[in-house]
Image 1 (cartoon, rainbow, N blue to C red):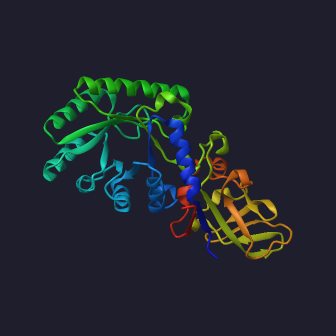
Image 2: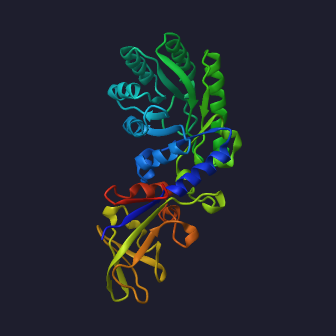
Image 3: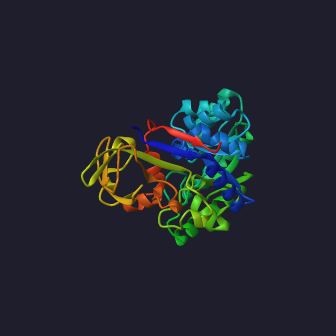
Length: 349
């Protein structure tokens, strides 16, 4: 039998409400990259839009177009990766806001807007030290001056300035915020009047009010995925929305075989380190093969028993972040590894 990923849309909506309450008056941009962190893009964005979410962070243009197809013309969609001129053309056609952190790409976007005879909406990205992408501070003055000229020409509407931060330490984040503040002043001196400033993701949006600005881009917390090394989900007022289950396929002595393996997205590096939740309590994950895994047995184990790989830690199951911490990664990485071939089963719509 196939493993299953149960998605509680009621929990998702409760998490979104909790995030919005926490960050207000800043607006929430719900990040839906990687198929909504493996939770399923279309059901997630429809549930969120029904509860009043109006901004979606789509990472790439392909995802942005899928959000637009699912929701129609009402929401604002922000994409910060455009790999080609075709991406830019498609983003303009789909009315997607674009995050631009490269001078050459800014010129390409102006060319695409000229071709489409419209104004492209753009959020300019300053590199505040993470070096993920964005314009370096030494090139920022020329970049915003050029953006202002293109806006005056009617090709662009500069609606935002934004960046990513590491969220690794308060000190590093403070340094990044100082660069961001400087970049905002430089943009205003260039004649730009962006209405949206966004810097924080999940952890900073909860912990540090001064990082919220006009909007926060939150993914993990909306899905109930806590930060590695951070407070548990319940103490944040969040509930994990996804539960990954697998069935017992055979009992062999003191070991139990499960119908889930590395090809389904279960990291093989968890073997010997992680416990899963069984009808007999927590049991150690012994081995992970391609399509099956082995766990330590329990009394009366039998084929068809259901084992929880991860889920709501308040129920005694490991959370995705609990598993992630065992192998030096983050909960989002565990969530997005679940194969798209694993059925998603939705409740609480």
